[in-house]
Length: 450
Ligand code: SAH
Ligand code: SF4
Ligand code: F3S
Image (cartoon, rainbow, N blue to C red; front, side):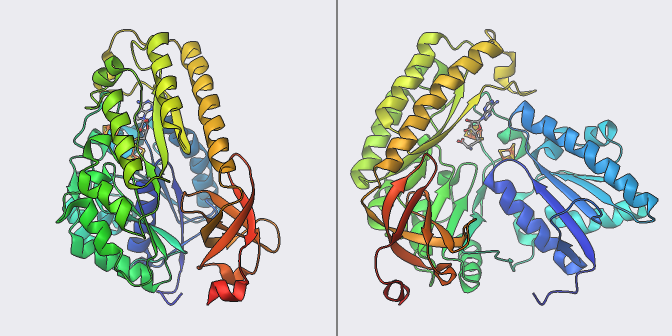
């Protein structure tokens, strides 16, 4: 690294979704010219940033317990004659604002997701301990324009935010409030960022957006994918998260035609009963979702599907929950996430009658997770005996092991040379576990590397 000599230590802890992971990297990019270098240890750091998530109650509460620990570190550093600045970023910052500093006075500054480019100024202000310390206004266009153009790629794969915000207002969800209105970055900016990443050795990008397939730049998401497929060195493209309502014909067609577009799609349905879907304001029915899945699989027969589910939405009956299980049985997911409904302040569902008891939610979640994990194991087992192209990303935990990902996003472990990292090579899959695959190079590695 040839950046400004690192003199200050920056610790960033990231909660929540991939967009926060991307934002944390961009915060590090903003702060690098000021002499901040990443440290893996909060203890003793000069600046601690918690990049927070507000999606469920537990996620938000975690932040306050972590702040308690960081506060003690700040005190220890002060005792030793040093200073630690504590910043709260992300969706809790946006949702709760200055309340955070009232609840935890050790916090020096609060910065919302659209204001990371103002971090240097906010930190300077905190240092001078005067002026307003809150910056949480929405201006997504400004954010992207003001962030440094150069990115610091950390590996073989990278996230790339192309869209932010949400206009869907599902009745359970805080995202439209914490991330603001849908905003799409221009194609040219995204292509430039992808080219920059590819030059640094990135072979796979995952395009990010809260509603990534609502991408409204020229040509829509399908056009963007086709354009990015032409970037030299970029061999794999993924995108997440998609809303079923925005899955258009052009994007479905791209899945059948663009080789770089990987056959894995995260397409949350949330629930299987139409009454619940209506109460959630999802804008799709179980039947329209199933129809969509059928179309996608017609374009790309080996498409692996993933999803998000909420159990115990207000008013959900046992029969309605059963409809979720039925839908899952019909779709057959490769992987999925399931959550107990969590009441979020200010969202319409929080005020709905028929809030479901915690034990009922627990019990439904366990049943759904059992089914999903059975499906995931079956999906992984179906790969045994196949030869899959694997993009190798990192050394494994055991010596002599390398780990990569299949086109379906499954981790694949093999015994092989570390020189495979950054390359795509064919792997004969010999065994599967619930969460990963193992195998061996299908050809002479020298040939695979050629
Ligand atoms: N924009 C994405 C994901 C949003 S948050 C989408 O629309 O799919 C990720 C997941 O968290 C959601 O898909 C949903 O399943 C879950 N989630 C959101 N709000 C929740 C709440 N109040 N309680 C429980 N789970 C929730
Ligand atoms: Fe939340 Fe719904 Fe928007 Fe997804 S589409 S971010 S679940 S409001
Ligand atoms: Fe959480 Fe905000 Fe992402 S609430 S899921 S970090 S958009």
